[in-house]
Amino acid sequence: MLGSLRVLTICLLIPSFASAQNMSLSTAVTVKDLETFLKAANERLNDLSVKYNQAQWVQETYITDDTEAVAAAMNENYLQAISDLAAEAKRFDNLQASPELTRQLKLLKLLVAAPAPNDPKERAELARLGAWLSGIYGKGKYCPKTGPFAGQCMGQSEMEKAMASTKDPEVLLDLWVGWRTISAPMRQNYTRFAELANKAAREMGFRDLGALWRSNYDMTPEQFSAELDRLWNQVRPLYLSLHAYVRSQLVKKYGAQMVPPTGPIPAHLLGNIWAQDWTHIYDLLNVPSGSGVDLTPILQQKHIDDLRMVRYGEAFFTSLGFEPLPKTFWERSMFRKPADRDVICHASAWDVDNQEDLRLKMCIRINDEDFRTIHHELGHNFYQRAYRHQPFIFEESANDGFHEAIGDTIALSITPEYLKQIGMISDAPGPDADIGLLMHKALEKVAFLPFGLLIDQWRWGVFSGQIKPDDYNKAWWQLREKYQGVAAPVQRTERDFDPGAKYHVPGNTPYARYFLADILQFQFHRGLCRAIGYQGPLHRCSIYNNKVAGERLKKMLEMGKSQPWPDALYALTGERQMDASAILDYFAPLQKWLDEQNANNGVKPGW
Image (cartoon, rainbow, N blue to C red; front, side):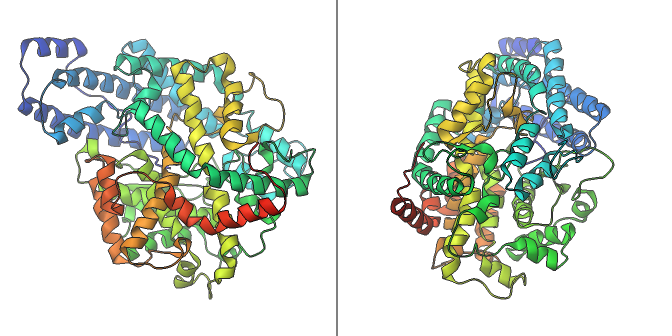
């Protein structure tokens, strides 16, 4: 996850809305005026974003009422600034200027996920609610009273570990229900937060906040919604095959009374708090060959600690020709959960000063999953540093899916061959292990696809008014079933607020980026493998230690957001349209095997 935001808490000394209107009436603006305005805005935004990032880092790594208050105050200043900037920018709406200047002007209005209402009291309220929602999630804990985890009060990181470590359905149910007790109190404040953010989006000229979010992809909101539908329909048959096979194996484990053979899968049985990653139930799926390589016991046997795990990630990027991470990265990052305070453990990469103050915030566990997550997060860091020479407004990825996809593209190169090269294993498994390797990867990547899509489907419905506050939870579970084929294991009511049990909802982080990243990473991977002349199964390709791949990657990363994303996609892959066929290519051997298994056992996909 991308941690530091480009701008969030900013106080700009620029003309008020009224004075901007007067200027537009009395003065004919020129391209030179626009250049001056954007230059000043970029410089001021860059300077003040550093102050925000420092404050936000403290809030997430030292959660107290005081740090929340500081973050809220900073956020209020930012919201005021963005309102003023958007007002002054209207002076230039009808000015004919270069594509670069016009692009900066447009992106200036899209810098935030929650714009500020014009009313000062509402602006302050929005900032306060945002800090409160983020803070209550970070402080959230559940303390089981019975079972193997009795007496342990668990936050998100501990909860994930607990749900991954047991197959007892009663224990899993208790953990699943318990984690959702942290989100029920969010409902009222989230409702008000959405109302205020929606109002601000309309004041900026958007239909609602969801339309604002969907305007950030070099296409109309309607076109973007259609694009997501197109991509989902490309990959849905693969997901249905996987879902059907997994469900049939869970029926064998837990019985038809608990797992309906033709219905949705109970959410607590998939090894993850949110049922978004199914890798922890691999051992229940009766896959005939091994899963490739499980790094967890290897890391532990080699006594590799959290610091060395991060060093392995850095070494991948330096093998491609990137410069090592700066000294301050190692001094200022958070790799371990502190014993003396609450922190937000959700892994994130930070670019505090928009230059070299890169950081990783993560409560690292010594296991396979976190080894790969580190490679993902460092992808953000190396992307951040690559575009640091761009104007501040362009210091972002081509679209937000690109930022998430880059690190995952690197993680796709964590193949057995790569692990052998770095001395993690002595021999790479042969082709007979490919079905197991692909199944393990599909439980992470393919299983995630509908979850990555539905989070924002729910929020767009909330923002548009299609989903009313009285139906928040009902609509949430309807979407979970529609897209994911997953159901709540116990009855849920509107006293619950299950969307809030996922960090990105109270944190107000748009989520379509993760669905896009799940598609794009395979397209990036295929493009880079083609560029280096790789011949063989796509899932066995690694770009480790290949400078040709590194140069192509650098070229795209350095573009930042200065060009429409199809241009950046072309620079990396030679293609201009997002295309899910790469994920189908990657998993083609597995889908063939899944379809054969399902057909031979009379298992019908769907629910």
